[in-house]
Image (cartoon, rainbow, N blue to C red; front, side, top):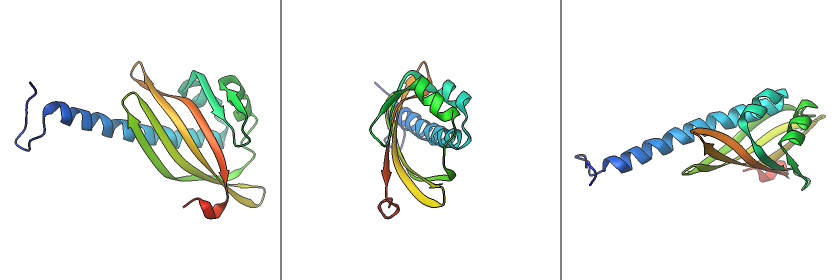
Length: 142
């Protein structure tokens, strides 16, 4: 039997709500760092925060693994003025989906991409296990 507070919320439900809120906060932070690492070609951040079995589906449909992702990151983003918005974090226990939109310039042209990151909590630590990127036209990012 779980303890129930005066508000009618039992302690297990309260703990679950707190854990979910903590996960959402942590994953928002990791998402921001993921995008920053992309913009700054920070392979060491990715090496630490991507799982060894990480897979990424690129906007052209190719799938790459962690070593290929790190190599592409080291080559530089080939874009400038990287920002992101429309972030939605959806935790499901030890898994979470993070959806968002990045905006950038390729040359002088503005562009945007929607992304989905799949994160898994392993040994108490969130790691990116998969990502998917889809290019979109600027009027379709809302």
